[in-house]
Amino acid sequence: MANQALNLHALADADPSAATVLAVTSGKGGVGKTNIAANLAVCLAAANRRVLLLDADMSLGNLDLVMNIHGRYNISHVISGRKSMEEIIRDGPKGLRVICGASGLDRLVDITEGEQHRLLEHLGRLQQQTDTILIDTAAGISRSVIGFCLAADHVLVVTTPEATAMADSYGMIKVLVRKGYGGPISLVVNMARSAVEGKQVYQRMAEVAQRFLCTNVYYAGTLLKDERLCAAVRLRTPVVLAYPKSEISTSLAALAARLAGTKRCNGSDDSFFRRVVRWLN
Ligand SMILES: Nc1ncnc2c1ncn2[C@@H]1O[C@H](COP(=O)(O)OP(=O)(O)OP(=O)(O)O)[C@@H](O)[C@H]1O
Ligand SMILES: [Mg+2]
Image 1: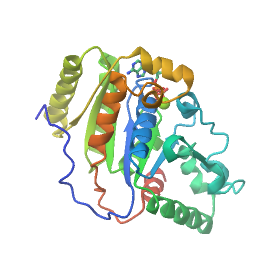
Image 2: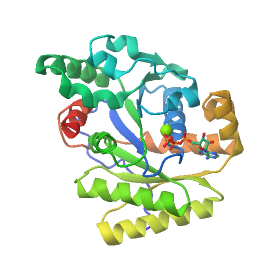
Image 3: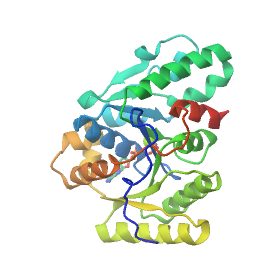
């Protein structure tokens, strides 16, 4: 089963009016999650999708680095009543909207049931007004990261050809499978030296996942190591906008086009945010 192309069009569509949710994750840090999530979000928004990018990594102001969006206020300010949801939503390029500090959702346990209900209603409405929610998770397999992934319709695991990154990505896939994740899991190989290397990395991971976890891992694609991505980070502009004609931008746009076919498949009628909170609590 090692070479399974990403083809999600056949999956059941539970409710076409609500957003589909894509989580970008990895085992190891620094493999390119934030750049991939941000650039995919820009590509989908440029194709007239209503996109919400959730920065679910509180630690390092990730989106600040990639697209100059400062997460001064986040979901925990909404939870504590200091800010409204409208006040924390930022506007990104191409009409993309951004929520910083979404991992603060785990603080929902600290408020009353009534307040929880109100906030979740609000987030549910936001999901109704959106076509795609992209989540940039933190690295590692913390409860919060796993909660966001389990609630998503599709998990995109990012690895590099480095052995430690591959081992940690496999660890992430293993946890998701053991927790009964029902959606597709796809692998992106980032910072590859060639397309052939990327495909080989994918094939090795897919074979191991098939043999030991009896699970399919789909091939989302390979992104080459490219100095223009680093240059774009220095400009604090997503590479697809800073260098739209570069090879990495073309690859990111192709990846976005493939992922645009993701259907809702989480099987539950709950909103995505309710599912996250259920997994976190
Ligand atoms: N395809 C690429 N080519 C060259 N450099 C890259 C590529 N992808 C990522 N990088 C480099 O890796 C750095 C880290 O990327 P990024 O912040 O997206 O990773 P991350 O997985 O989100 O990290 P963290 O786990 O800390 O959140 C970038 O600033 C860039 O220098
Ligand atoms: Mg990051």
